[in-house]
Image (cartoon, rainbow, N blue to C red; front, side, top):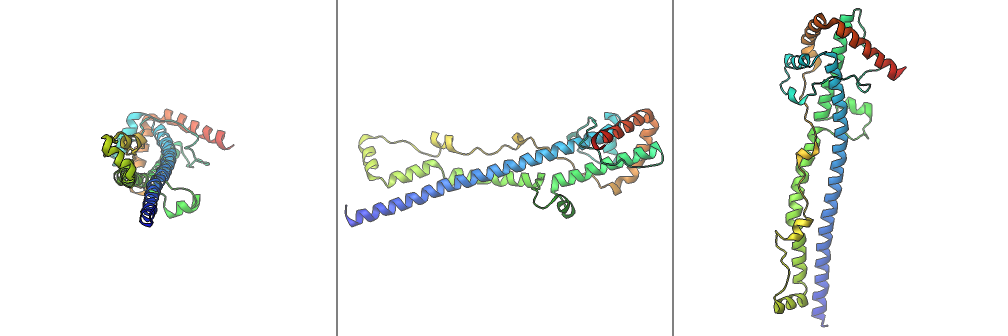
Length: 266
């Protein structure tokens, strides 16, 4: 082999090595990014489940599903179709200590306000992330997955998937490698053979990344609820009206809530 041939071979080997490194490196990095994304999705789903429990507890305090719909409309919430409408008493949603008041009616008002504020703050953290004080409380090392962040990651990852599929495709690597292999090119020239590795080849279809379908994530977007001090008076009025119409049911509900607290913390 001549010095020129030897130099050409070494150059070809170096170019092909760089291409292979870029190809596998880009795919490895994308795989790691996708895995991280799904870790954030899993964490957000855990938050979604807890927030749904809190919604159901508030709904449970409101006695009936019709009252639930009227409650959210009365405080100016429009996207009530994405809010759970059924009620349930879960130990995940009750506090350590019950709100206090002199009368059962007053206690009921305080319970609804407490449950509402828990849901309102939960929606804010779920949609937009925890504020500084909340991060200090839970610890900065905790991963703060929230809806805006996960959807932003989803958009960027799909952009990267399209880029990797287009710029670092398997067919492009193989076609380039063949150009550096004169023996293979000569054989294909005489035999009329050779495999088609175009953009729509079966190789690309099999090895390309599929964009992540947003619907497949099953992540719910909750509405941003008004802060308690903005709707405090309206909630008090709603609660007093509900108590006048459902006093016996509310008495039973408050008793069941206190019993649930004792079961969890005593």
